Length: 455
Ligand code: BES
Ligand code: MN
Image (cartoon, rainbow, N blue to C red):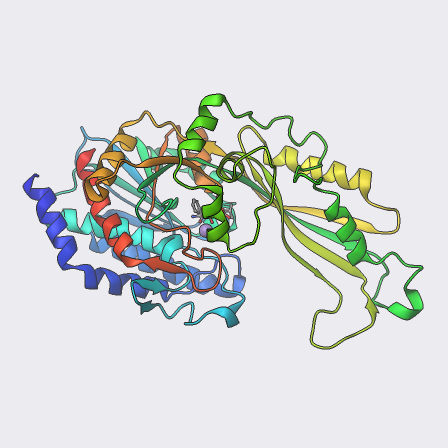
């Protein structure tokens, strides 16, 4: 092992406590991107990240405005003959509700056993800090081995709506050879993982209107079509018995899995029973002709993310509500287009909605799926790094989550992403009691030290 590598690893091992404290500082900042009330926190979090980059010796650090939340940019480019690695991260987090189910404050990062609890610890403030810690260790042991650029955004958790335009407008500034993206997680703590497929997303809000105000359900029930019922009927018609989505032409552009791809899925270590455990349900659901990992990695879905109508407080109230709404989103696979899926849902509603109600459909965000090229130097560097730390060859998988920037970088910057990460499937992402498994996180820091020195 080279001196720099060993010195950097030693430094990382000696500074575990400092790294953890710094992560706790970042997690304490409530950077919830979807909630305007947190706009000032978003700015503060961007400033915290910028300050940390400067401390690492990164130059030209800037907080760059977008149409939404700002991007933190920085660079280090003292090796003109070496590749440029663009480090992607997001400093925003999901909302904390239902807050009453958290055992510790979401923004009071707390260590319990081997885990750190707090919103964003795993998705993805911990991952951002693992990268910055690895770079700190490398810098302590010498100079950076490659050129670096940083794009740390604040809108990933709302679908990166302003990022495409930002990347387009800053193409030259962001010009790089590859992107390191640690937002993709591991299959399990003993299974180092490289992700090469992500699903896309198309997110909608559907509102159904009936009478112009809430009615007495005794005086109106039986003659007025209840909007909550009408919405439920529409939603129920969106799937058939086998979990197939009934929007017109929905499957026309869905790329069919090849025999080789299905064999790859079958070789993954996760079985349908593991999913049963992980998800905490009695039985799995969905298209029966596909395995659970195929359904998650390579089949599209339509999901009800939330519904609201009428009286939902304590006690009872006999009301026939004036309106009902649902948040609906589709996970997309290659080669579906979010705009086309929006039109398909519109057509479905035009054909199926009864005359008794009025409906409105709003498109909230859209991002296509992505498949990344595994035949690239960055993937070799991370595969070797994962092997050095875990002593196990990494698994290659397609994941069901979405990271819009991956396809934005492919189409606008023409670069591929190296997708990995050190979050686990039971980290409670987007849910109460989000956690980060610290032993796995420390392995992640070591892995990233190897990665940068392998390139
Ligand atoms: N890190 C996740 C996505 C993820 C999770 C990928 C686990 C692989 C494994 C990311 O931050 C996320 O949650 N993205 C949102 C994006 C959406 C709002 C466009 C998602 O998938 O819901
Ligand atoms: Mn997320």
